[in-house]
Length: 322
Ligand SMILES: Nc1ncnc2c1ncn2[C@@H]1O[C@H](COP(=O)(O)OP(=O)(O)OP(=O)(O)O)[C@@H](O)[C@H]1O
Ligand SMILES: [Mg+2]
Image (cartoon, rainbow, N blue to C red; front, side):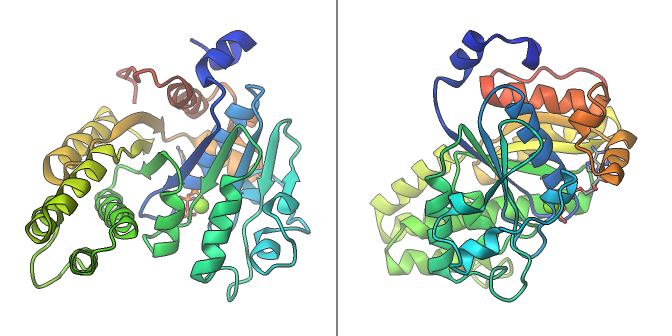
């Protein structure tokens, strides 16, 4: 099925009128989060849906550059620093129909490190935006701010490249995201302490995986142990392997999926892969989004397939290409 040949009826069938928030993160810098956020957003907007891209890479905002836009007058800084009252006031139009953009904060001191209340206000406003799809591009690393933005959606997408360093960071990121998620909903002091300990990789009690936390929490309070088990079952991040060059790179997504389940009890969806493609580099140099500049490129086709997979929830069919 081709994304752009669907008629309006098929599209509404696909979306079922739901508003979706997608968050795009991953432990490592430079893996392609922003590139993917922008191009997925464009694929969706060409579909007739209202899309807002939000650059939550506080301090390292660069989505506007991927889109070839100059730095606008209104940015997330204005909202975080209360110069405007609503996030709607900082959504700017792009040249692309149906695609709005919130340009990230660039003032390093205030907006890049929002205080807790500012962050939760921002998250509330993002949740109330009027759009069919809201896509959040996250910064690198697994700081609390990044994890909290990552966790605001049901569609948590991880971008990994087939390099040991990036794979390692992704494992750490996902574990931290799960620990952060449960820390926010558990009020029992003793269990919170265990979760805090788990966040420290080298903790003395050797708490490493969600299984360890569930076991220890269950000893303190059986019902909390069961609650954590349910949270683990419902935590279902999605994975994209970017910059693949070989068939074994493609398979990394499948191995990570089984390793996450086996060692952490986390079920992950493997959304698909994007080939390493010089056209990506060319499009970034030209400040023109790949799917518009090189719609026939191999990487554009991969993004098209991933978009389709995301909106239809149909299984991804792996080709032997890579
Ligand atoms: N599939 C690909 N093929 C070739 N080059 C790619 C591909 N994906 C990304 N790149 C290159 O990687 C660079 C970094 O991508 P991007 O800025 O999207 O990463 P990021 O994860 O957002 O980084 P950061 O964590 O610093 O925000 C791009 O400028 C592009 O040149
Ligand atoms: Mg980025």
